[in-house]
Length: 467
Ligand code: FAD
Ligand code: NAI
Image 1 (cartoon, rainbow, N blue to C red):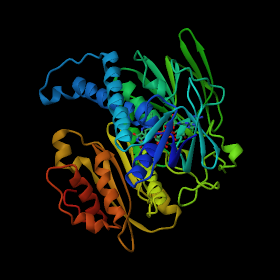
Image 2 (spheres, rainbow, N blue to C red):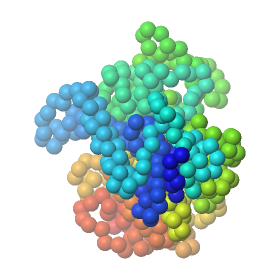
Image 3 (spheres, rainbow, N blue to C red):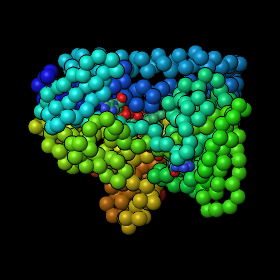
Image 4 (cartoon, helix red, strand yellow):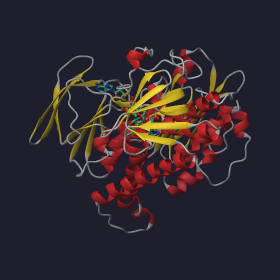
Protein backbone atom coordinates (compact mmCIF):
# COMPACT_ATOMS: atom_id res chain seq x y z
CA UNK A 1 0.00 0.00 0.00
CA UNK A 2 1.61 3.29 -1.19
CA UNK A 3 0.98 6.65 0.39
CA UNK A 4 -0.48 7.86 2.56
CA UNK A 5 -1.42 10.92 0.54
CA UNK A 6 -3.45 13.93 1.58
CA UNK A 7 -5.18 13.88 -1.78
CA UNK A 8 -5.60 11.51 -4.72
CA UNK A 9 -7.15 12.93 -7.88
CA UNK A 10 -8.66 10.45 -10.35
CA UNK A 11 -8.47 11.86 -13.89
CA UNK A 12 -6.01 14.51 -15.10
CA UNK A 13 -8.20 16.63 -17.37
CA UNK A 14 -8.40 20.41 -16.76
CA UNK A 15 -10.34 19.79 -13.54
CA UNK A 16 -8.08 17.09 -12.11
CA UNK A 17 -4.60 18.33 -12.99
CA UNK A 18 -5.37 21.90 -11.91
CA UNK A 19 -6.81 20.66 -8.60
CA UNK A 20 -3.70 18.53 -8.02
CA UNK A 21 -1.29 21.39 -8.76
CA UNK A 22 -3.14 23.92 -6.58
CA UNK A 23 -3.30 21.41 -3.70
CA UNK A 24 0.44 20.71 -4.02
CA UNK A 25 1.16 24.46 -4.05
CA UNK A 26 -0.71 24.68 -0.75
CA UNK A 27 1.49 21.98 0.79
CA UNK A 28 -0.65 18.85 0.38
CA UNK A 29 0.95 15.54 -0.56
CA UNK A 30 -0.79 14.69 -3.83
CA UNK A 31 -1.03 11.83 -6.32
CA UNK A 32 -2.93 11.64 -9.60
CA UNK A 33 -4.33 8.57 -11.37
CA UNK A 34 -4.92 8.71 -15.13
CA UNK A 35 -5.86 5.86 -17.43
CA UNK A 36 -4.75 7.57 -20.64
CA UNK A 37 -1.08 7.46 -21.58
CA UNK A 38 -0.94 11.26 -21.45
CA UNK A 39 -2.31 13.88 -19.07
CA UNK A 40 -4.71 16.70 -20.01
CA UNK A 41 -7.95 14.71 -20.36
CA UNK A 42 -10.52 15.16 -23.10
CA UNK A 43 -9.63 18.82 -23.46
CA UNK A 44 -5.96 18.50 -24.36
CA UNK A 45 -6.04 15.10 -26.08
CA UNK A 46 -9.29 14.98 -28.09
CA UNK A 47 -11.20 18.20 -27.32
CA UNK A 48 -10.40 21.88 -26.92
CA UNK A 49 -6.79 21.82 -28.09
CA UNK A 50 -6.95 19.62 -31.23
CA UNK A 51 -10.22 21.22 -32.35
CA UNK A 52 -8.74 24.70 -31.99
CA UNK A 53 -5.62 23.66 -33.94
CA UNK A 54 -7.81 22.53 -36.86
CA UNK A 55 -10.08 25.58 -36.56
CA UNK A 56 -7.03 27.86 -36.71
CA UNK A 57 -5.37 26.08 -39.64
CA UNK A 58 -8.57 25.69 -41.67
CA UNK A 59 -9.52 29.34 -41.10
CA UNK A 60 -6.15 30.49 -42.46
CA UNK A 61 -6.54 28.08 -45.40
CA UNK A 62 -9.91 29.58 -46.27
CA UNK A 63 -8.65 33.13 -45.73
CA UNK A 64 -5.69 32.47 -48.03
CA UNK A 65 -8.04 31.13 -50.70
CA UNK A 66 -10.76 33.77 -50.50
CA UNK A 67 -9.72 36.72 -48.34
CA UNK A 68 -6.11 37.44 -49.25
CA UNK A 69 -6.73 38.49 -52.87
CA UNK A 70 -8.95 41.38 -51.73
CA UNK A 71 -5.96 42.77 -49.81
CA UNK A 72 -3.65 42.46 -52.82
CA UNK A 73 -2.03 39.21 -51.77
CA UNK A 74 -2.11 36.62 -54.55
CA UNK A 75 -1.65 33.02 -53.40
CA UNK A 76 -3.04 29.64 -54.43
CA UNK A 77 -3.24 27.57 -51.25
CA UNK A 78 -3.06 23.79 -51.57
CA UNK A 79 -4.23 21.52 -48.78
CA UNK A 80 -1.84 18.96 -47.29
CA UNK A 81 -4.24 17.32 -44.81
CA UNK A 82 -1.62 14.91 -43.42
CA UNK A 83 0.56 17.91 -42.53
CA UNK A 84 -2.39 19.77 -41.00
CA UNK A 85 -3.10 16.73 -38.80
CA UNK A 86 0.59 16.60 -37.86
CA UNK A 87 0.40 20.31 -36.89
CA UNK A 88 -2.55 19.42 -34.67
CA UNK A 89 -0.71 16.43 -33.14
CA UNK A 90 2.28 18.63 -32.41
CA UNK A 91 0.03 21.14 -30.61
CA UNK A 92 -1.43 18.34 -28.47
CA UNK A 93 2.05 17.05 -27.61
CA UNK A 94 3.25 20.49 -26.54
CA UNK A 95 0.27 20.83 -24.23
CA UNK A 96 0.21 17.34 -22.68
CA UNK A 97 3.99 17.42 -22.15
CA UNK A 98 3.49 20.77 -20.43
CA UNK A 99 1.03 19.23 -17.95
CA UNK A 100 3.40 16.29 -17.24
CA UNK A 101 6.17 18.83 -16.55
CA UNK A 102 3.96 20.86 -14.18
CA UNK A 103 2.88 17.76 -12.24
CA UNK A 104 6.52 16.76 -11.81
CA UNK A 105 7.59 20.29 -10.90
CA UNK A 106 4.98 20.30 -8.13
CA UNK A 107 6.20 16.90 -6.86
CA UNK A 108 2.91 15.16 -7.60
CA UNK A 109 3.12 11.35 -7.91
CA UNK A 110 1.53 10.11 -11.11
CA UNK A 111 0.02 6.62 -11.55
CA UNK A 112 -1.07 5.34 -14.97
CA UNK A 113 -4.11 3.05 -14.94
CA UNK A 114 -7.81 2.94 -14.09
CA UNK A 115 -8.57 4.31 -10.66
CA UNK A 116 -11.20 2.65 -8.50
CA UNK A 117 -12.36 3.72 -5.06
CA UNK A 118 -12.25 0.66 -2.80
CA UNK A 119 -13.43 2.54 0.28
CA UNK A 120 -13.13 6.10 1.61
CA UNK A 121 -9.36 6.71 1.77
CA UNK A 122 -8.47 3.74 -0.50
CA UNK A 123 -7.88 3.80 -4.25
CA UNK A 124 -6.68 1.00 -6.50
CA UNK A 125 -4.92 1.60 -9.81
CA UNK A 126 -5.20 -1.07 -12.49
CA UNK A 127 -2.69 -0.53 -15.29
CA UNK A 128 -3.22 -2.04 -18.76
CA UNK A 129 -0.34 -4.39 -17.98
CA UNK A 130 1.21 -5.22 -14.67
CA UNK A 131 0.26 -5.27 -11.02
CA UNK A 132 -2.65 -3.49 -9.36
CA UNK A 133 -1.43 -0.83 -6.93
CA UNK A 134 -3.34 0.22 -3.79
CA UNK A 135 -3.02 3.74 -2.46
CA UNK A 136 -4.04 5.36 0.82
CA UNK A 137 -5.22 8.94 1.14
CA UNK A 138 -7.20 11.38 3.28
CA UNK A 139 -9.28 12.79 0.40
CA UNK A 140 -10.27 11.55 -3.06
CA UNK A 141 -11.32 13.81 -5.95
CA UNK A 142 -13.23 12.29 -8.85
CA UNK A 143 -12.43 14.28 -12.01
CA UNK A 144 -13.19 11.64 -14.62
CA UNK A 145 -14.93 13.98 -17.07
CA UNK A 146 -17.40 12.98 -19.73
CA UNK A 147 -17.89 10.79 -22.77
CA UNK A 148 -19.71 11.07 -26.10
CA UNK A 149 -23.53 10.67 -25.90
CA UNK A 150 -24.63 7.85 -28.20
CA UNK A 151 -27.53 7.98 -30.63
CA UNK A 152 -29.66 4.87 -30.03
CA UNK A 153 -29.12 2.27 -32.74
CA UNK A 154 -26.17 4.12 -34.27
CA UNK A 155 -22.74 2.55 -33.87
CA UNK A 156 -19.80 4.93 -33.93
CA UNK A 157 -16.87 3.37 -35.84
CA UNK A 158 -14.78 6.60 -35.82
CA UNK A 159 -14.19 6.23 -39.58
CA UNK A 160 -17.48 6.84 -41.36
CA UNK A 161 -19.75 7.39 -38.37
CA UNK A 162 -17.67 9.52 -36.07
CA UNK A 163 -17.82 11.31 -32.76
CA UNK A 164 -15.73 14.45 -32.26
CA UNK A 165 -12.72 12.17 -31.69
CA UNK A 166 -12.94 10.60 -35.17
CA UNK A 167 -13.85 13.95 -36.73
CA UNK A 168 -10.47 15.30 -35.54
CA UNK A 169 -8.66 12.47 -37.34
CA UNK A 170 -10.26 12.05 -40.79
CA UNK A 171 -7.48 11.15 -43.20
CA UNK A 172 -9.41 12.44 -46.23
CA UNK A 173 -11.77 15.39 -46.66
CA UNK A 174 -15.24 13.86 -47.07
CA UNK A 175 -17.16 15.20 -50.04
CA UNK A 176 -20.35 15.22 -47.97
CA UNK A 177 -20.74 15.27 -44.20
CA UNK A 178 -23.95 15.06 -42.17
CA UNK A 179 -23.78 16.40 -38.66
CA UNK A 180 -26.34 15.27 -36.10
CA UNK A 181 -26.70 18.08 -33.56
CA UNK A 182 -26.30 21.85 -34.07
CA UNK A 183 -24.43 22.32 -30.81
CA UNK A 184 -20.89 23.51 -30.20
CA UNK A 185 -19.09 20.44 -31.52
CA UNK A 186 -21.25 20.17 -34.64
CA UNK A 187 -20.73 23.80 -35.58
CA UNK A 188 -17.00 23.97 -34.77
CA UNK A 189 -16.05 20.73 -36.52
CA UNK A 190 -18.61 21.31 -39.29
CA UNK A 191 -16.82 24.62 -39.94
CA UNK A 192 -13.44 22.88 -40.12
CA UNK A 193 -14.51 20.33 -42.73
CA UNK A 194 -16.56 22.81 -44.75
CA UNK A 195 -13.53 25.09 -45.03
CA UNK A 196 -11.43 22.14 -46.17
CA UNK A 197 -13.93 21.30 -48.92
CA UNK A 198 -16.76 19.13 -47.53
CA UNK A 199 -20.42 19.87 -48.20
CA UNK A 200 -21.82 20.05 -44.66
CA UNK A 201 -25.46 19.47 -43.70
CA UNK A 202 -26.62 19.79 -40.08
CA UNK A 203 -29.67 17.95 -38.72
CA UNK A 204 -30.93 19.37 -35.41
CA UNK A 205 -33.73 18.11 -33.20
CA UNK A 206 -34.82 21.54 -31.92
CA UNK A 207 -36.14 24.41 -34.05
CA UNK A 208 -32.99 26.46 -33.38
CA UNK A 209 -29.24 26.01 -33.25
CA UNK A 210 -27.12 26.34 -30.10
CA UNK A 211 -29.73 25.81 -27.39
CA UNK A 212 -28.90 27.83 -24.29
CA UNK A 213 -27.21 30.64 -26.24
CA UNK A 214 -29.01 33.99 -26.64
CA UNK A 215 -31.63 33.44 -29.33
CA UNK A 216 -30.87 36.59 -31.34
CA UNK A 217 -27.17 35.73 -31.43
CA UNK A 218 -27.94 32.13 -32.46
CA UNK A 219 -30.25 33.33 -35.27
CA UNK A 220 -27.71 35.74 -36.70
CA UNK A 221 -24.97 33.11 -36.37
CA UNK A 222 -27.07 30.59 -38.30
CA UNK A 223 -27.56 33.13 -41.10
CA UNK A 224 -23.80 33.71 -41.28
CA UNK A 225 -23.02 29.98 -41.34
CA UNK A 226 -25.65 29.47 -44.05
CA UNK A 227 -23.96 32.17 -46.15
CA UNK A 228 -20.72 30.23 -45.72
CA UNK A 229 -22.44 27.17 -47.25
CA UNK A 230 -23.50 25.02 -44.28
CA UNK A 231 -27.09 23.82 -44.69
CA UNK A 232 -29.45 23.28 -41.75
CA UNK A 233 -32.43 21.02 -41.21
CA UNK A 234 -34.02 22.07 -37.92
CA UNK A 235 -36.80 20.30 -36.04
CA UNK A 236 -35.59 17.00 -37.47
CA UNK A 237 -34.32 13.76 -36.01
CA UNK A 238 -32.21 10.93 -37.33
CA UNK A 239 -34.15 7.70 -36.93
CA UNK A 240 -31.78 5.23 -38.56
CA UNK A 241 -28.41 5.00 -40.21
CA UNK A 242 -27.11 2.37 -42.64
CA UNK A 243 -23.63 1.97 -43.98
CA UNK A 244 -22.76 0.52 -47.38
CA UNK A 245 -19.74 0.63 -49.67
CA UNK A 246 -20.60 4.06 -51.03
CA UNK A 247 -21.07 5.70 -47.62
CA UNK A 248 -23.87 6.28 -45.11
CA UNK A 249 -27.62 6.54 -45.64
CA UNK A 250 -29.36 8.53 -42.96
CA UNK A 251 -33.11 8.55 -42.42
CA UNK A 252 -34.36 11.88 -41.12
CA UNK A 253 -37.86 12.55 -39.80
CA UNK A 254 -39.46 15.87 -38.94
CA UNK A 255 -39.96 16.04 -35.15
CA UNK A 256 -43.46 17.46 -35.67
CA UNK A 257 -44.40 14.47 -37.83
CA UNK A 258 -44.51 14.07 -41.59
CA UNK A 259 -42.58 12.25 -44.29
CA UNK A 260 -39.10 10.96 -43.64
CA UNK A 261 -36.27 11.64 -46.09
CA UNK A 262 -33.13 9.68 -46.77
CA UNK A 263 -29.86 11.57 -47.01
CA UNK A 264 -26.51 10.22 -48.19
CA UNK A 265 -23.12 11.21 -46.84
CA UNK A 266 -19.52 9.99 -46.81
CA UNK A 267 -19.19 10.73 -43.12
CA UNK A 268 -21.72 11.28 -40.33
CA UNK A 269 -20.66 13.17 -37.20
CA UNK A 270 -22.78 12.42 -34.14
CA UNK A 271 -22.56 15.46 -31.83
CA UNK A 272 -25.64 15.32 -29.61
CA UNK A 273 -23.97 16.10 -26.30
CA UNK A 274 -21.75 14.46 -23.72
CA UNK A 275 -22.53 12.36 -20.67
CA UNK A 276 -20.67 12.14 -17.33
CA UNK A 277 -18.09 9.36 -17.18
CA UNK A 278 -18.24 7.29 -14.00
CA UNK A 279 -17.53 3.77 -15.23
CA UNK A 280 -15.14 1.55 -13.31
CA UNK A 281 -14.90 3.85 -10.29
CA UNK A 282 -16.86 1.58 -7.95
CA UNK A 283 -19.42 4.29 -7.18
CA UNK A 284 -22.38 1.89 -6.80
CA UNK A 285 -20.55 -0.23 -4.21
CA UNK A 286 -19.47 2.91 -2.39
CA UNK A 287 -23.00 4.36 -2.47
CA UNK A 288 -22.09 7.69 -4.14
CA UNK A 289 -25.33 9.44 -5.14
CA UNK A 290 -25.95 10.34 -8.78
CA UNK A 291 -28.70 12.57 -10.21
CA UNK A 292 -31.16 11.56 -12.96
CA UNK A 293 -28.55 12.41 -15.63
CA UNK A 294 -25.94 10.22 -13.90
CA UNK A 295 -23.95 13.25 -12.71
CA UNK A 296 -22.32 12.94 -9.29
CA UNK A 297 -24.25 14.99 -6.75
CA UNK A 298 -22.04 17.36 -4.72
CA UNK A 299 -22.69 20.10 -2.17
CA UNK A 300 -21.38 23.69 -2.34
CA UNK A 301 -17.94 22.41 -1.33
CA UNK A 302 -17.82 19.68 -4.03
CA UNK A 303 -18.34 16.94 -1.41
CA UNK A 304 -20.33 13.85 -2.37
CA UNK A 305 -22.55 12.05 0.14
CA UNK A 306 -19.58 9.78 1.03
CA UNK A 307 -17.08 11.23 3.51
CA UNK A 308 -13.73 12.20 1.99
CA UNK A 309 -14.93 11.76 -1.62
CA UNK A 310 -15.29 14.88 -3.79
CA UNK A 311 -16.07 15.52 -7.47
CA UNK A 312 -15.46 18.33 -9.99
CA UNK A 313 -15.66 19.09 -13.72
CA UNK A 314 -17.81 17.45 -16.39
CA UNK A 315 -18.77 14.61 -14.03
CA UNK A 316 -20.88 17.01 -11.89
CA UNK A 317 -23.66 19.45 -12.87
CA UNK A 318 -22.99 22.71 -14.72
CA UNK A 319 -21.59 23.65 -18.11
CA UNK A 320 -19.20 21.05 -19.55
CA UNK A 321 -16.36 23.49 -20.06
CA UNK A 322 -12.66 23.23 -19.35
CA UNK A 323 -12.40 26.58 -17.52
CA UNK A 324 -15.37 25.67 -15.29
CA UNK A 325 -13.60 22.39 -14.40
CA UNK A 326 -10.35 24.28 -13.73
CA UNK A 327 -11.98 26.84 -11.46
CA UNK A 328 -13.68 24.04 -9.53
CA UNK A 329 -10.30 22.31 -9.22
CA UNK A 330 -8.72 25.43 -7.71
CA UNK A 331 -11.66 26.09 -5.37
CA UNK A 332 -11.72 22.51 -4.09
CA UNK A 333 -7.94 22.39 -3.53
CA UNK A 334 -8.20 25.60 -1.51
CA UNK A 335 -11.10 24.24 0.53
CA UNK A 336 -9.17 21.02 1.25
CA UNK A 337 -6.22 23.13 2.40
CA UNK A 338 -8.48 24.98 4.83
CA UNK A 339 -8.97 28.10 2.71
CA UNK A 340 -12.16 29.58 1.23
CA UNK A 341 -12.51 28.32 -2.35
CA UNK A 342 -15.47 29.48 -4.43
CA UNK A 343 -16.75 29.40 -8.04
CA UNK A 344 -19.12 32.10 -9.32
CA UNK A 345 -21.41 30.11 -11.62
CA UNK A 346 -23.15 33.32 -12.76
CA UNK A 347 -20.03 34.42 -14.60
CA UNK A 348 -18.74 31.53 -16.69
CA UNK A 349 -17.97 32.58 -20.26
CA UNK A 350 -18.90 30.32 -23.14
CA UNK A 351 -17.14 30.60 -26.52
CA UNK A 352 -17.63 28.93 -29.89
CA UNK A 353 -14.41 29.16 -31.88
CA UNK A 354 -15.86 29.34 -35.40
CA UNK A 355 -15.57 32.28 -37.79
CA UNK A 356 -17.02 34.55 -36.67
CA UNK A 357 -16.79 33.51 -33.04
CA UNK A 358 -19.74 33.42 -30.65
CA UNK A 359 -19.29 34.32 -26.98
CA UNK A 360 -21.53 34.87 -24.01
CA UNK A 361 -21.45 35.36 -20.28
CA UNK A 362 -24.29 35.68 -17.81
CA UNK A 363 -28.01 35.62 -18.46
CA UNK A 364 -29.63 35.55 -21.91
CA UNK A 365 -32.65 37.71 -22.72
CA UNK A 366 -34.81 34.59 -22.62
CA UNK A 367 -33.59 33.75 -19.10
CA UNK A 368 -34.17 37.30 -17.84
CA UNK A 369 -37.71 37.32 -19.28
CA UNK A 370 -38.46 33.97 -17.70
CA UNK A 371 -37.17 35.18 -14.33
CA UNK A 372 -39.30 38.36 -14.62
CA UNK A 373 -36.25 40.64 -14.30
CA UNK A 374 -36.60 43.98 -16.09
CA UNK A 375 -33.55 44.95 -18.10
CA UNK A 376 -32.23 47.42 -20.64
CA UNK A 377 -30.50 46.34 -23.84
CA UNK A 378 -27.56 47.97 -25.61
CA UNK A 379 -26.50 46.65 -29.00
CA UNK A 380 -23.67 47.59 -31.30
CA UNK A 381 -22.91 46.07 -34.73
CA UNK A 382 -19.34 45.37 -35.87
CA UNK A 383 -20.34 47.11 -39.13
CA UNK A 384 -20.01 50.40 -37.21
CA UNK A 385 -16.61 49.60 -35.66
CA UNK A 386 -13.64 51.17 -37.46
CA UNK A 387 -11.23 48.30 -36.98
CA UNK A 388 -13.76 45.68 -38.11
CA UNK A 389 -14.58 47.82 -41.14
CA UNK A 390 -10.96 48.20 -42.26
CA UNK A 391 -10.31 44.49 -41.66
CA UNK A 392 -13.55 43.60 -43.49
CA UNK A 393 -14.72 41.49 -40.57
CA UNK A 394 -18.04 43.25 -40.05
CA UNK A 395 -20.40 40.30 -39.50
CA UNK A 396 -21.97 40.25 -36.05
CA UNK A 397 -22.85 42.43 -33.07
CA UNK A 398 -22.51 42.81 -29.31
CA UNK A 399 -25.40 42.94 -26.89
CA UNK A 400 -25.17 44.14 -23.28
CA UNK A 401 -28.05 43.39 -20.90
CA UNK A 402 -28.21 45.57 -17.77
CA UNK A 403 -30.63 45.58 -14.84
CA UNK A 404 -33.29 48.26 -15.47
CA UNK A 405 -33.12 49.50 -11.86
CA UNK A 406 -29.47 49.20 -10.86
CA UNK A 407 -27.74 49.18 -14.29
CA UNK A 408 -25.67 46.19 -13.13
CA UNK A 409 -24.61 44.09 -16.14
CA UNK A 410 -26.48 40.78 -16.14
CA UNK A 411 -25.36 39.31 -19.44
CA UNK A 412 -23.23 40.02 -22.51
CA UNK A 413 -23.66 38.17 -25.81
CA UNK A 414 -21.57 38.49 -28.92
CA UNK A 415 -21.13 37.15 -32.40
CA UNK A 416 -18.25 38.58 -34.40
CA UNK A 417 -14.49 38.69 -34.94
CA UNK A 418 -12.35 37.66 -31.95
CA UNK A 419 -15.29 37.85 -29.53
CA UNK A 420 -13.82 34.83 -27.72
CA UNK A 421 -11.19 37.29 -26.45
CA UNK A 422 -13.54 40.28 -26.06
CA UNK A 423 -15.83 38.36 -23.70
CA UNK A 424 -13.13 38.40 -21.00
CA UNK A 425 -13.66 42.08 -20.23
CA UNK A 426 -17.39 41.47 -19.84
CA UNK A 427 -16.62 38.62 -17.41
CA UNK A 428 -14.25 40.81 -15.38
CA UNK A 429 -16.73 43.69 -15.06
CA UNK A 430 -19.51 41.27 -14.11
CA UNK A 431 -17.30 39.58 -11.51
CA UNK A 432 -16.85 43.00 -9.91
CA UNK A 433 -20.60 43.71 -10.10
CA UNK A 434 -20.02 46.56 -12.58
CA UNK A 435 -22.67 48.55 -14.43
CA UNK A 436 -23.09 49.34 -18.11
CA UNK A 437 -22.11 52.91 -17.24
CA UNK A 438 -18.83 51.69 -15.68
CA UNK A 439 -18.04 49.89 -18.93
CA UNK A 440 -19.18 52.82 -21.09
CA UNK A 441 -16.94 55.26 -19.17
CA UNK A 442 -13.83 53.07 -19.36
CA UNK A 443 -11.38 54.31 -21.99
CA UNK A 444 -10.84 51.71 -24.75
CA UNK A 445 -7.94 51.91 -27.23
CA UNK A 446 -8.64 53.02 -30.80
CA UNK A 447 -8.82 51.41 -33.28
CA UNK A 448 -9.74 48.11 -31.62
CA UNK A 449 -12.64 45.70 -31.67
CA UNK A 450 -12.96 46.35 -27.92
CA UNK A 451 -14.53 49.70 -28.76
CA UNK A 452 -17.58 47.73 -29.89
CA UNK A 453 -17.94 46.42 -26.33
CA UNK A 454 -17.78 49.95 -24.95
CA UNK A 455 -20.28 51.23 -27.52
CA UNK A 456 -22.72 48.38 -26.77
CA UNK A 457 -22.52 49.46 -23.11
CA UNK A 458 -23.08 53.11 -24.18
CA UNK A 459 -26.07 51.93 -26.23
CA UNK A 460 -27.74 50.74 -23.01
CA UNK A 461 -28.06 54.48 -22.17
CA UNK A 462 -28.93 55.23 -25.83
CA UNK A 463 -25.75 57.23 -26.29
CA UNK A 464 -23.55 55.15 -28.60
CA UNK A 465 -21.54 57.54 -30.79
CA UNK A 466 -21.03 55.58 -34.00
CA UNK A 467 -24.60 54.50 -34.57
P1 FAD B 1 -11.78 15.39 -18.81
O1 FAD B 1 -11.01 16.41 -19.53
O2 FAD B 1 -12.74 14.57 -19.59
O3 FAD B 1 -10.71 14.44 -18.12
C1 FAD B 1 -11.07 13.30 -17.44
C2 FAD B 1 -9.90 12.35 -17.42
O4 FAD B 1 -10.19 11.29 -16.52
C3 FAD B 1 -9.61 11.69 -18.75
O5 FAD B 1 -8.27 11.88 -19.11
C4 FAD B 1 -9.91 10.21 -18.53
O6 FAD B 1 -9.02 9.35 -19.24
C5 FAD B 1 -9.67 10.09 -17.04
N1 FAD B 1 -10.39 8.99 -16.39
C6 FAD B 1 -11.71 8.67 -16.48
N2 FAD B 1 -12.01 7.64 -15.67
C7 FAD B 1 -10.85 7.29 -15.06
C8 FAD B 1 -10.52 6.32 -14.10
N3 FAD B 1 -11.44 5.49 -13.56
N4 FAD B 1 -9.23 6.22 -13.71
C9 FAD B 1 -8.29 7.05 -14.21
N5 FAD B 1 -8.56 8.01 -15.10
C10 FAD B 1 -9.82 8.13 -15.52
N6 FAD B 1 -14.28 23.11 -23.36
C11 FAD B 1 -13.89 24.40 -23.37
O7 FAD B 1 -13.95 25.06 -22.32
N7 FAD B 1 -13.41 25.00 -24.49
C12 FAD B 1 -13.31 24.33 -25.66
O8 FAD B 1 -12.87 24.90 -26.67
C13 FAD B 1 -13.72 22.98 -25.70
N8 FAD B 1 -13.64 22.28 -26.84
C14 FAD B 1 -14.02 20.96 -26.84
C15 FAD B 1 -13.94 20.26 -28.05
C16 FAD B 1 -14.33 18.94 -28.10
C17 FAD B 1 -14.23 18.19 -29.42
C18 FAD B 1 -14.77 18.28 -26.91
C19 FAD B 1 -15.15 16.83 -26.94
C20 FAD B 1 -14.85 18.97 -25.72
C21 FAD B 1 -14.48 20.32 -25.68
N9 FAD B 1 -14.57 21.07 -24.51
C22 FAD B 1 -14.20 22.39 -24.50
C23 FAD B 1 -15.06 20.49 -23.25
C24 FAD B 1 -13.87 20.12 -22.35
O9 FAD B 1 -13.02 19.23 -23.03
C25 FAD B 1 -14.35 19.51 -21.05
O10 FAD B 1 -15.30 20.36 -20.44
C26 FAD B 1 -13.20 19.30 -20.10
O11 FAD B 1 -12.21 18.47 -20.66
C27 FAD B 1 -13.69 18.69 -18.77
O12 FAD B 1 -12.61 18.50 -17.91
P2 FAD B 1 -12.59 17.36 -16.80
O13 FAD B 1 -11.31 17.55 -16.09
O14 FAD B 1 -13.85 17.40 -16.04
O15 FAD B 1 -12.60 15.98 -17.60
P1 NAI C 1 -24.34 20.28 -27.27
O1 NAI C 1 -25.13 19.99 -26.08
O2 NAI C 1 -23.62 21.58 -27.38
O3 NAI C 1 -25.26 20.19 -28.57
C1 NAI C 1 -25.94 19.02 -28.90
C2 NAI C 1 -27.02 19.37 -29.90
O4 NAI C 1 -27.57 18.17 -30.40
C3 NAI C 1 -28.18 20.17 -29.28
O5 NAI C 1 -28.46 21.26 -30.12
C4 NAI C 1 -29.31 19.16 -29.22
O6 NAI C 1 -30.58 19.74 -29.35
C5 NAI C 1 -29.00 18.29 -30.43
N1 NAI C 1 -29.52 16.95 -30.40
C6 NAI C 1 -29.64 16.11 -29.32
N2 NAI C 1 -30.17 14.93 -29.70
C7 NAI C 1 -30.39 15.01 -31.04
C8 NAI C 1 -30.89 14.11 -32.02
N3 NAI C 1 -31.27 12.88 -31.70
N4 NAI C 1 -30.97 14.53 -33.29
C9 NAI C 1 -30.58 15.78 -33.64
N5 NAI C 1 -30.09 16.68 -32.76
C10 NAI C 1 -29.98 16.29 -31.48
O7 NAI C 1 -23.34 19.05 -27.43
P2 NAI C 1 -22.03 18.84 -28.30
O8 NAI C 1 -22.00 19.77 -29.46
O9 NAI C 1 -21.97 17.37 -28.54
O10 NAI C 1 -20.88 19.25 -27.29
C11 NAI C 1 -20.79 18.62 -26.01
C12 NAI C 1 -20.23 19.58 -25.01
O11 NAI C 1 -18.84 19.75 -25.21
C13 NAI C 1 -20.82 20.97 -25.11
O12 NAI C 1 -22.02 21.06 -24.38
C14 NAI C 1 -19.77 21.81 -24.51
O13 NAI C 1 -19.98 21.85 -23.12
C15 NAI C 1 -18.48 21.05 -24.81
N6 NAI C 1 -17.76 21.72 -25.90
C16 NAI C 1 -17.37 23.01 -25.74
C17 NAI C 1 -16.72 23.67 -26.74
C18 NAI C 1 -16.35 25.09 -26.54
O14 NAI C 1 -16.40 25.56 -25.42
N7 NAI C 1 -15.96 25.81 -27.58
C19 NAI C 1 -16.40 23.03 -28.00
C20 NAI C 1 -16.89 21.67 -28.07
C21 NAI C 1 -17.51 21.07 -27.05
